[in-house]
Image 1: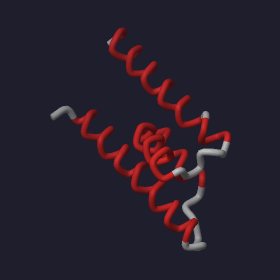
Image 2 (image 1 turned 120 degrees about the vertical axis):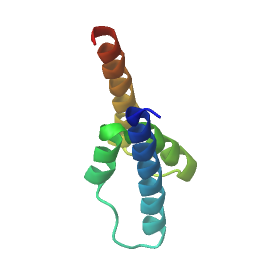
Image 3 (image 1 turned 60 degrees about the vertical axis):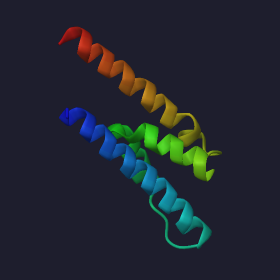
Image 4 (image 1 turned 45 degrees about the vertical axis):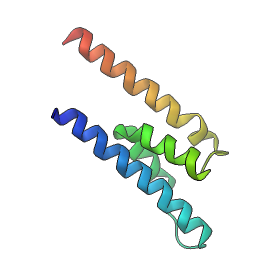
Length: 88
């Protein structure tokens, strides 16, 4: 299997799990995962997993930077991948 696809799969699973776990911590009123950590995971390739988890668990869906930032990261990642494939 392609290492790039393995990396994307792992980063998306990590993003999905982190958002779900943060929702669990929020309901339990415990110390949460920093928003910067959640955004970093989305930025390094886990944007799809993060977005799916957001929608499934209804977590961070009202926060502007998550509601629009995660889909924007996904679009940016796809654009960069397309440019990479075109020019290399």
